[in-house]
Length: 270
Image (cartoon, rainbow, N blue to C red; front, side, top):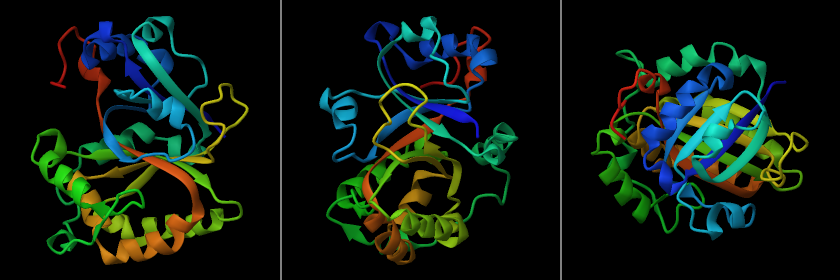
């Protein structure tokens, strides 16, 4: 099973901008072969016990999610632009990597009819006191309403999930995953496009406490919110997902096409 590196990167202040990093990344694209390059937008769920010193204690602002099909360290020219780095390695089934780029391009640039309509759950949302159980809190709802009105917020989002299971409870999460693919996620355009088991002997210690990683696509932040606000999703979430997890985190990201930065131009506005 191919092993991929999932890098969270906080850029050095001297780097100045994300486009400056992407210009350098593009020069290594033929060797690194990035699967995903995303701008980190915000935390949806914070880890509560695992990796908290590395991810949260220094109040780090994470800038980039970079997923590459290799365990080779990032080139020195990229390392020089990075102030903080958190990396986990995961074995990803080959079937998910075959033709990944074309399938991902179709998700990020959908054709007419590809995006399902919202189900209407946001008209009478199920509001929780906190988003930590992957529910729609008042604060998260207000942020989504604001973000969805921006140009970036009208496009697709990719949610990075790290998962640690309660002893003997993984089967419950698998049932949740099956329901996500069958109905509660897919009817909102949800697609778990990268899923893998954390590899604990691939080098580095950042991911030692975690079990699985998943990158879930949604056509827009409103499709994600529509899911969280619904009764059908929360029935499955509370029955299977929540009891199965010892800890988890979710980061909302927006994917970037690095080919736009290869011609010496400024690329898209970030």
